[in-house]
Length: 282
Image (cartoon, rainbow, N blue to C red; front, side):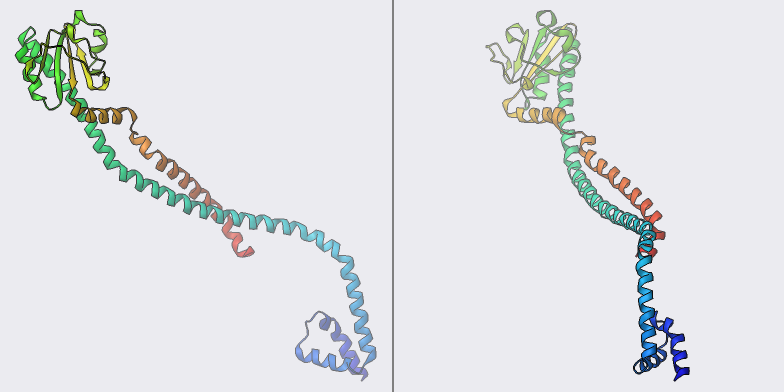
């Protein structure tokens, strides 16, 4: 029995730390069942161990704190990496939607721009042809003016010719075709319409976008659009002055593209520096 006690007492430290084999554990427990001395020794060893653990616990807690802080910091960094990943995906989705919307509207925008340019070019052509006809004759000529009107009779109500000296704002009008409130037709040298020279009093259209004027040093040409053509002129005016530019059309997609690339760059950098830590923490 004594020899058995010596063996058991040698094994007790391993038994307490749960390091001994199953056979040794069974042997110790069977011995303890009928040996009070060894049982008392086991009890004392556990008590001493508890006292040591209680005494060393604060020290171990203090030693553990820095590692806990590091662990919390690294986990926060991993959470931030996941947040960047989600943010990148969301930003990319919004960017793609905005790009699709912008390109969908680009075709319509181009058609509107072409229509506006057509109306503007048409105004310039009417003025250029009228002045060319006047200069070819060297003097006001009703037939020359009528020939220009007939080329654009679907658009025009009438064309009028004035002497520059009889009108105001001539220097401003020399810059090119521009909208204006009609010059008083009583001052006109010639006014032509569908029926040729118009001698009756003309009530001007007070819708200034529907009246165009242009001048050189000698003459002032003014024409008014037909009522039926005014919506086309108004639409061209709106397109030129109030419709978005290409930059405005693509501004939001551009901004979100930059944001997406910025998030993606940060995410890749964060992922690269955190990759060595993922195995340790996760």
